[in-house]
Amino acid sequence: MSNDTGSARKARGPQRPTIRDVARLAGVSRMTVTRVLSEPDLVLPATRDRVKKAITDLGYVPDRTAGSLASRRTGFIALVLPTLTNANFSMVAHGLTEVLREKDYHLLISYTDYDLGEEERQLTALLERRPEAILLTGAKHRRSVARMLMMADVPVIELADLSSEPIQHAVGFSNHQVGRVAARHLISRGFRRIGAVASRPDRDQGDYRGEARIQGFEEELRAHGISTELVLRHGAAPVSYDHGVEAIGILLDREPALEAVFAVSDLSAVGVVTECQRRGVDVPGQLSVLGFGDFEIGRVINPPLTTIQVDFHALGKRAGHLLLDLLGGEIEDEPQSIDVGLNIIDRASIRDTTE
Image 1 (cartoon, helix red, strand yellow):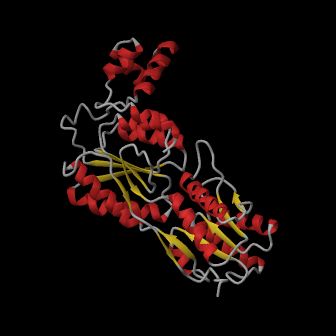
Image 2 (cartoon, helix red, strand yellow):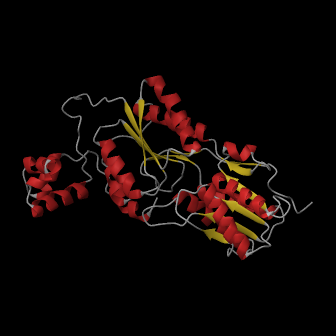
């Protein structure tokens, strides 16, 4: 969780802010607040700005279903993912759906393209429809998003990352630990000229989980006295086959004697292998490659890709069972943090130099 959300977490209140609260804070009538929300051009700019500031400060979200759903039972669960094209996030949705459909809940899915601003817009739209719970990816959010979620008065579960201070609950794994495990694995095979490829971090748009992997990787290299100068952050998130092609080209031009490389995603790793083959660089004879994610394409390329695996389908199911327990009152609403673990799948893309 980012520092931005830490102070907001302490301000968590027991009730969802109302239009009356917004009107009181802005010093206007409830009708004026309604007009700002529905017909903002009819409100004087100064008044409109004052109301919008009150909305932001309170984390208020209009309730679009209040008039027709007095029971507050909508049957919808909101799921926010960074992308719909990543197979692992699809597996999270599958696992969730398998569990939730048993109790007749349905997913409302949106995606952010790794953009924190878009995450805020999507969550605002979802909350207006009163989902009974919210699941979102990662532990880094804007402060305004954390405030909004804490005031939503529904269970919130962060997925695919573990934070020391989750908003409420978390089901995932340590991306930082992924990086450390990756570095230790390559070092244990006898490599010293070790590189890595990831996307470039950005303030509002970036793969923060991938960056955590790279930071863990760098820490482990330094702990073993190995330089991090061959760790490359290149291009924007999300990473892809093309990203791997471009990044390994840069690294090999910089250090032709590179021995091993870690890619923060199997997608980049496959691009790395492809570009090596185009250049006549033998994998793993000259360069060993390690990925993350255990994507299907990594299993079928030649050589098959050694990777760090997380069972994302099981992650989705664990989150679903936790959610049903929370909604059903089976467990107290105390913060839950569930680590689904990770493991290395050894295939043929890494050479053991210790033999």
